[in-house]
Image (spheres, rainbow, N blue to C red):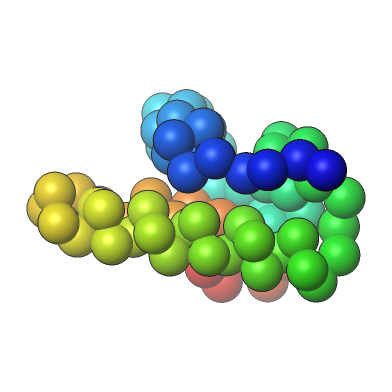
Length: 75
């Protein structure tokens, strides 16, 4: 079982933010994190993205979690 680490996801989001195409769909983010696509793992990713948003808010940074979008382009 793969355990997601908020620091690793944060680092991945920084890399994505610095990429010319600076968004990623949830399915691709799950792949990047080594997860198979299923609702339970998506919740795990979503929980970490929420933690990262709180961290961004406390630091006065842009919300990096908004870079992870659904297939319609909505964060």
